[in-house]
Length: 506
Image 1 (cartoon, rainbow, N blue to C red):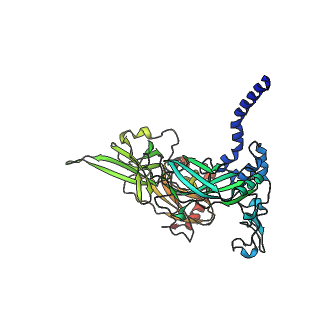
Image 2 (cartoon, one colour):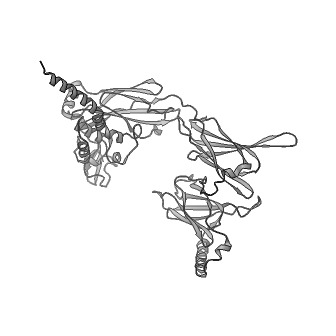
Image 3 (cartoon, helix red, strand yellow):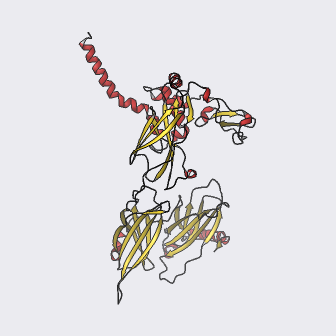
């Protein structure tokens, strides 16, 4: 008979183990939260260095109760992957490229080995994996069963006999199953439009339940790899394409707000902003409507305007609004699914232009609704010899070092009336990812465009921005500056004129 104290001690030990279980499980799967970008966590710098099969191998090698140092040391160490380099006569021209792409097997992704040949060292797919008995079999017969609207069950079986699998399990320890997916959005399946493979699930059993990870209106395809402490034989054949249910219309845009109201040439300008709504498929664009009631001698009518706004913008500047009028503002989200448009309900707001000063943002720097794409922005706007100087900055391109910069004055607060002519555009070709626009007039609105001068892409319209040039005081105050500074500005101004002489006006 066991002693009573031993029984009490055993119970206490079991309770402590149950309390430790979540911590052990957390340590066990810490790498996978870093590993799975598309479904469970964001892609991190750590996973960019180590591929998924390598992390799965270290997880199976260290076991369930390993410390974090075991996985870290395993990932950092070099190891020889199973298999052999192919014969030089069977190499493809890409594999036999004259370059040094690796130094050991750890530098090659997935199953690839670092192989040397007559012209260099490159990563190649190994041969002889079928002759290894210490590797788990490649999964086969991958089946997809949809249990509910957003619940999918994946099942598969091992390709080899149970004796071979038992030998692999005994030699390589536990087996990790990596489930990868790739997808496309649209009503039709086109294999050429499928994205890249991404790990979406990790399992220790030959099945996986994907709950809440599949997007509506998408086609999905899956594959599975079995990995143990010695490595893997590779991925299974891709499953049949699987389509989720039809997408719904987007939700209506939220939180319509007005800001930065101001008068330009006797007309009112104001920014309309909204919050991006939820949508089953990506939003393609927005439609902005604004209308006002026109009173006539016979019948009253409604004048309606509309504008299409790019998908990455949630702001639009309404221009040329009349004072002492009531406007009805609406914003609608549109998603294109195949050849069909999915439209949201219109979010609406009533605006009385008589009360525009309530949205004037007086006393603080307002957020202007700039038309910007892909990182183009204005930096270092300051006053230079009575004129505004603004620096345009944009992301550098890896395939071109020549950029065509075009800018034009759109409107100016100094000049009132509808009869003012808009100035012609000027352009300049530069080799840097920034350019200084000089001699801009104060309190004027400018539009600028930067286009990558790639000969192979004739449809590239570039990236654009609209900004408000400000920062200089009145000319009377500028003339009060010391004479030395005035002379310096005159010299700079003459240089600017020579600088502008090589610009082309269109």
